Amino acid sequence: GVGALGLSACGTVAFGGGGGFLGTNLTDRLVKDGTRVINYSRSWLQKSDSPLVQYVTACAEDPDQLAHLVGQSAYVFHMAHGSSPTSSMHYMEEDLISSIRLSFTLMRHCEDTDVPLIYLSSGGAVYGRV
Image (cartoon, rainbow, N blue to C red):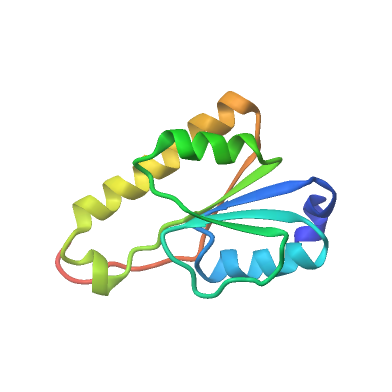
């Protein structure tokens, strides 16, 4: 579990793309341990009422905002954007470029600040003629 990573004693954890299934559940778990969470995403399945959680609407096109969030964190979790057949089918190229841009920007900022980056993906699929 997350306790094996020692995150409950690290201060602040940032979740990129934390509005989905993984981010929502990890946020709840870490808050129970007293960890401060910066959760940035385009949208959220649900939000915690805890004062330990800060929600930030972030986008891949704002590298300064991402650099600031990384700089406040002891760890960054990148919840990889999963492709959805209903939204990605018609915009596959844009969806892929946006996801790669965010991943690369986070990797660069984490490397520059020596903040560990933990990459997670809950899957996704693209259907049709690819």
